[in-house]
Image (cartoon, rainbow, N blue to C red; front, side, top):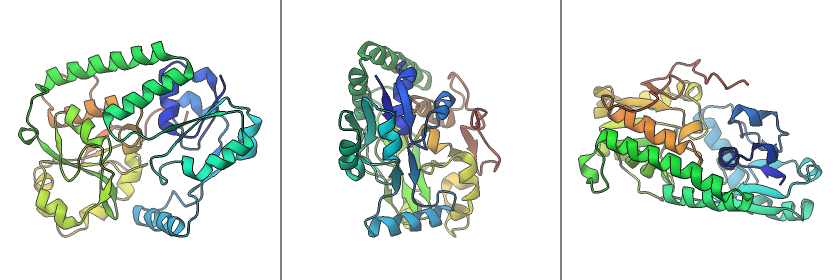
Length: 321
């Protein structure tokens, strides 16, 4: 099977299920694992991605309000690759090329290819979609085995931090997950589930609910035990460059999490924003952050999580491979 993936999470699942050799093309954002970076790139953003958080937000809103696409797909190059399967998403027009934008073009340029679209809203839906993808790839057994292994590891994590299915949410450390710094947005979809698996209780959102913009007054009223900063599409270095959007606000210093030193920055792009296999690692990072004395495997690395403002030069060792 020849697979063209226009979605980073889908690319990661294909690799996790042993299908690396079937990939023939990728989106410009498909960067993990490093082996996929040598594949032909099929997409490009139509808005500046190197700007600060406010600049990116404004550019995206201008294009959306004008009815313009946020991504270009190189349809000629895609057609030349002759894929049997094209992977895309119907979740978010901002995150990657969406099915609604490109479905007609795909059917015209690659009429023989099957389209597979992802749109999970919760952690359970992420796994259900991954299994459906595994069946589509003809790798059902590999998909089931991979997820079963990770679910076992998740149960061991729950045991290590003393989390049980019946544990009441309000007895767990409260967390607000910031998905964008300017304007302020809180992470939704599967993120509350990931936080719960890591032994926390996400405030200002519910599992499956979309990410949403919040007022600083809402954050101040919630006043969580911990504040997790994980901007969508941002590495830790990107987050460092946008840190003042948070700390310059007059209510920042009054937050309990700030006063207690429980503000943590994560590589949101790698671990929280994508509905892919690294969500399991995200749950481990949450647990290690909220329960630092618990015996958990693989301590957080500097490129995964840092307390307070991350170092501007922070980068994963595989980032340039």
